[in-house]
Image: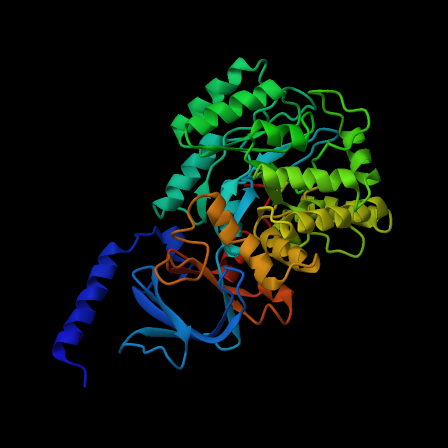
Length: 474
């Protein structure tokens, strides 16, 4: 028999939890399907993000936006009146924590490369695709990104938790109109401190910087406890690692270490690519580089989706073609048809890079993941995040390893792993409920039903549908 005191205690707990819950605007509320102070998901399969084996027949209890209990369904007792969600034939994984995301998308014009800010569509798409936390991998409108982050936190916009990287730190090279360019190394310290004061938490150096630029950037950022990442070309991975860069983007695809005629502080992308193509997959040079990066604790972000070949693949990997405006769909279809059977070199380099990335991981390197929705325009937020997990499994990572790379590892890098990144008692309820079993077919990751962020459940399909045909506009 339940005692009156127990009933009163439960009622009081529900009232307190409701008072502590976040307020959402009507624009956000329409995507919310679960906003109860306490609920349980029963009979579900859980991949907890730690890398440990998948567990079946589990029950998870959420209370006040935290994970209160997890265990075998036969051993978990549910208190009276708690809402339950049947997780039979479904899987829970932690919310994705992805570290090379952008709030912009490729918008070329004639022979100009350009990008456009996707202020409204991309935050929804990231959350729809299971991303509960993201770091922008460089911003073209950092103040816009900071505003979006703030409004999401306040419940006024729909999207993941955000960590914003400052504007690209770059010297003038190829003409990309949205990039700002520095003229000398003295400007680096100003940029770092100005944007750190505004609230960014990391910085990204780009293709044409000098060693002096990076040295100043690392010094100033580290003074403030912030991190530096890079998409490099003028500097080699080895040079940047020795200077103390925290993170390198794109696996090994941006490495100029194997150029035969490398000139210091000069970017020659054609020579860099030839060096990668000619490097033996098991060559001495690549293995020495991997060992150096591991020794220096340099983190690698893999972004395989943006490099995915055309032949025998989806036009938009992950299935996001319908998210785009019709004009972009037409352009991508035309490029896709022209490229079929003509990208053998890209396929070879794509596979070689995945082999190196896995070797880096297997030897003890710290690997995180992201998408980078730029390039040819085939990388679309949300869809690309799901596809990234698929690619890792296709590359030979176990399902559990792939999930860990895209969840816990990202949390560790962002120093938020005490609160999120895994399905563990006491952590924030950031997780995804998926129809199907990922170990049976990793493509079941596309069957996301509900994305829980801070304990609140958002309808994945409704989020995807809400911006259908709009990416490229806003």
